[in-house]
Image 1: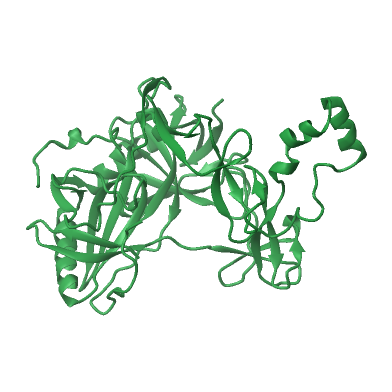
Image 2 (image 1 turned 90 degrees about the vertical axis):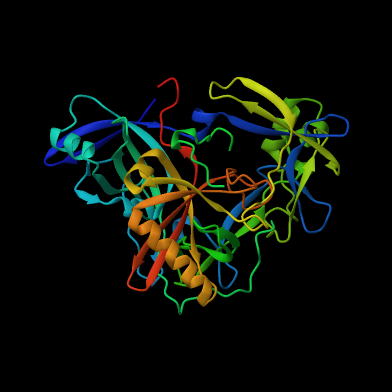
Length: 208
Length: 234
């Protein structure tokens, strides 16, 4: 069942259901099946460095240790930012209404990587001011956290060309202007590991 | 930092660099003594101690359950909990034996979940640093339209490696900035193929965006493998 977020815009609160949209729903999916020479299905496992210990899927776990090699339980961990300042926990975005007030332009959204895309299902309670703003091409940014945690992810609300309302959950990037003096170093690995006049609508994403 | 072979609108090409713009680890975790902590992978289970192996040791599930209540036959006290280093990914058959030779097939399902075809696995070859440069396709899409048509899930910043490539990329960024648009790039002989960065990796459509400020520039390669549109049933 779709979960519901509450938003506040211009003093009016409304609810919106989140409907996740992913690539599999649009184009289908591809599943790789691996078999041995006898036709038996194979699964991925891990071989330990001793060369003989076979570890099945789910047979490893992650733990935290400090500089002295001592085991630290998750409850003892203190999250801090890059400068060492403690970070406080943020609540889940489903716990309270999200205020939509920060409008940004397209280049701000373009500076982010979109991780998740949701269609927002809103009933007639959508405030007219927001409806008008979205139809005029405005984009609103806010902080979003599904379960709560140490920080919000940047998220955006905008309308597509068909006036559907979307919420994009993203991650920020560090995009900086570069000048002549900031040439990249040539050493480094290369990635080993005709102008046509077709209409834009001919882009075939299903072939990817 | 990967190389890419990129051509401009006049089809002049040059090898330049594509840098990651990701922000690494914005959060660190400190232990109770205030010192830095790291994650370590530890051993939790082996095939000798999983459910199949335990079932072989006991005549019935009830007997195994009794053994689990009375002791710890599922735990190897000598090895469980040890840190794991230099592990290898391997294939294992249903008999929990190492497999050295495998055959792979792809099961292709449509958006409705129905199987459409079964084929040998296809691994696309990388094409962003080949003899054939990535080309401008001539398809310009305005910034405002692009963010409403495509989901950009990744991006790379294209940067120069010397004075000549600075001029080359600055001119490209200037042209795109003035057009306030993104240019669709294409790979391969026909200049229509999606971009593949590593063998077998996800192919992406690449869109080049340029911005300039005084004598500095930003040239961003936006990557997308999904349109912003609703599934057919919606």
